[in-house]
Length: 182
Image (cartoon, rainbow, N blue to C red; front, side):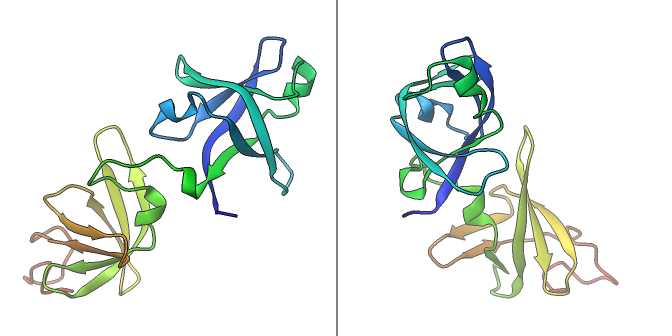
């Protein structure tokens, strides 16, 4: 079986007929529309259940899902806090130039001159842009905006990212440029 990818977390029961209100963990909330099955890991349990969905739609910033065979408030309440996942093979197809965060994490980062800088340790997101947290060869971290001015190439197949750093981007000793200090 494929690895599972988290797409939502059940936050509460909606109504008395077993509908679940699910907070989307996806940048593509429309992925919930018409969903037919998911894998659910209930809070506090390690096993994953493959469940069929009677209906699923995205409404008012939440997904609303009705699981097959779950028809009352009490039956649905046992799913509150559960993780909702799909197989990796069922991820949405991304537009060119966009990447899943878990694809970027662990990627080797090298300068445009071919020097190894470090590894992407995390991706920090905010409303304006994503920031790469890079663990450098010397063990220190630095943050790099994930924008085309700095990130010149991302090659998921090779697990490599090429960046172009500007002077002063890294805190350097002396008068060396960021490229020279690597």
